[in-house]
Amino acid sequence: MGSNNHGKRYHNPARLALIQRRLFVCAGLSCYNPVFSKKDGIADLTMMKNTATLLVTCPDQKGIVAGIADFLYRHNANILHADQHQDAENGLFLMRVEWDLSDSAINADNFAEHFTPIAERFSMTWQLKLGQKSTRMAIMVSQYDHCLVDLLHRHQSGELACEIPLIVSNHRHTERLAAYHGIPFHYIEVNRDNKAEAEAQQFALFDQYGIDLIVLARYMQILSPAFVQRYPQRIINIHHSFLPAFIGARPYHRAFERGVKLIGATSHYVTEVLDEGPIIEQDIARISHRDQVEDLIQKGRDLERVVLSRAVRWHIENRILLYANKTVIFD
Image (cartoon, rainbow, N blue to C red):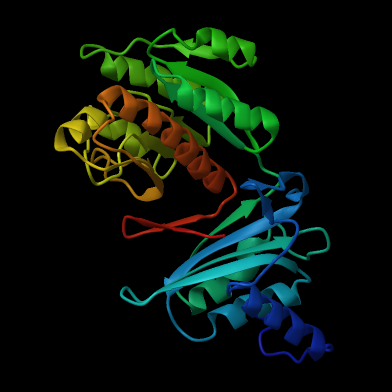
């Protein structure tokens, strides 16, 4: 249908011009829509119900925005938000478009059929995400519970619009916390001798609960290549340093020994190379010569909580596009 309608005259050219103008303005810096406005960093998730989000990556060229606007107009879609980014060095165009599905003539079942001609025309790689599909998120944690506590609080308050059907840990320290929130807790011991067996148990749980996203909330185990390959771009980690500085273990101790004046935290997607996956979010705090290792750890934990929660929220809200070991975070 998308290709058959291409080139037809529109009965309401003024409406087409309006929707194209709206898309061009939204793709800039001044788009405001109450559905996606944020107050104190919290999205109004209650209104993000019957919507669809299109994430596009393709070679940069003329006509992409107009082509998508034309497509959505012809299928009676009301654009709620749009943003774009051009990577001049790599010649890439990246875009996020979100629209209301209430009166739209396209849905998840027929979208690919209608959109394929445009995608092929511009050599697009694309994903369609539905607002009504809730992300099912598993949290993995070891002994330190500060990131877990923060995620559970934000989930309970409605800031993280997802489901948390289970918590997995190699320690029992957070079992009571999980019980308090009514979330099933699964203790799986991990050591050098049983790592493959332990991960097999974890895989079985993730399959059983239909997990979409795995969050490592200070889970202090290195995942095997098989684990990472099983869940590509679906594992988010928090590392307690401003990467690429101080990769690996004991970053606060090494930062103290180095005499740094800034410490940081980094949330990133997990790849097979330790702490080198695409970075989603980072933040820093200033320290001084008066701070001891314990002070760095305390200040760093505050950063870890905020940085991880931002990354998780942006993933849940389908605001992230990955390319060349980088991320684009759309507003």
